[in-house]
Image 1 (tube, rainbow, N blue to C red):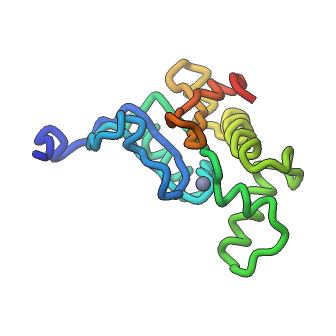
Image 2 (cartoon, rainbow, N blue to C red):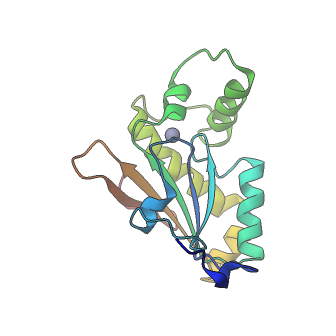
Length: 175
Ligand SMILES: [Zn+2]
């Protein structure tokens, strides 16, 4: 495949996408499973967490400098981080610290479900709620109609995989 020459010195992606590091996830699914450079500004980490400092740095860069108008946070079926949240002990300091961060900052130390897949959806709803409330830049851009924040859920526990839109600007579409 020839690399698009128009992307040589600049990028103009249309969406910020935060998804989990899980190998069964792929940002290309958002472009019909084809590799399309320059389309999506991707942030990946365990549990698709937009609230980690490094994720927020990427988001703010994309909003301020690339002027992207859509921010999508995508969760998925059978997420290891959601399972980790439901488990008691973690023998690794980095996993423990990420689990603690998510529990405290997203769920206020009270997990709303014992089902990992339900938790994956709640994780999206809460993050969007928090971003809209507490992130001044996100809040300002959304209020001026310069940004929409959406949440999605990727289900591969089905014959045909499906990405469902579950949240739009804080409005829960699918619980
Ligand atoms: Zn995951």
